[in-house]
Length: 405
Image (cartoon, rainbow, N blue to C red; front, side):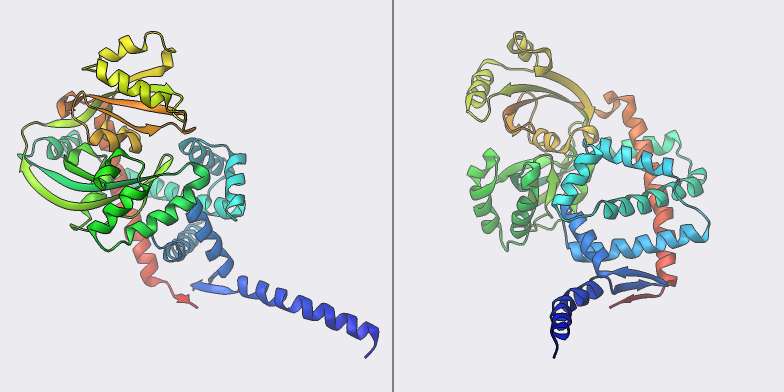
């Protein structure tokens, strides 16, 4: 064997595993009609979902999303439709605004998670194009009357009974750089076999004062929670633990210990008036000391104005918001409070500012803001659009030839 032959043999033996790996990575994993989804695309989608803090079986979810998106894009192509460059840029701007980030920061975070920027852009394009198509096609068929909105608000406020839940809670503190780690821990907790095991976990890892009690809460009106959390809790059986729920700077888990129906003595709960006082130096412990001192000296939200008179203007905020419009981490804390009660469990993003949270009042639905009626109308419109979209996608799925390798 000549030196040249030996050289090429060595190069070939080194390159062969790499070539075989590339072929495997980009070989078909799923075929949807004539479209191919590769193992690379599946891997990228799993990593994207993980970067977004998505709960559940990410492998199964990635597979289902990519199949659905293939069907959606094929249907749009059949109809000669596509998303314009301007439409995509609007969708991207909306996404960045909702997540309070910039395009560069988003791509930097995704790259750190092993996600190519094109993977995200493909995901955004498919779902934005489909959403625009559904709106353009079906929006004209939907009419939301004032009576429809009144009926929903009436169901929420006029019932003679209400549902209360008995929960245990765990909140894992998770700044953005530790979110993936926290989600892994939360998923392990979600699989715990018993109430005792959940309470042990709460004592060890929960960031809330309720950890001293194994995370156990007293009975709370279900209406106190935002609508998304109500659905999550009603989906649990006693003893079951929720999927991990990403919230700002944390991950929440709930275990349902009981559920009951009681007489409704008030229609309060449509909107909440609450105050937030921002106290610096939380890491040093000074903020917690100040919070205890403030709590001893006040009785109502009005007293906070005297406390804040020598602070910067932005240190105190007092708001009236519909429950569904309150940030989820704050809404979870407010749900546990009675008027004039206080929570000091939350921190701002930097971790060094304590949020002194006080519930001022729960307002009855007729006193809720007019924007609440607009929100209900939008909810009804979105639900009906989703119904049309789900029905069309189900038909596409039923008539498709889907092969999973």
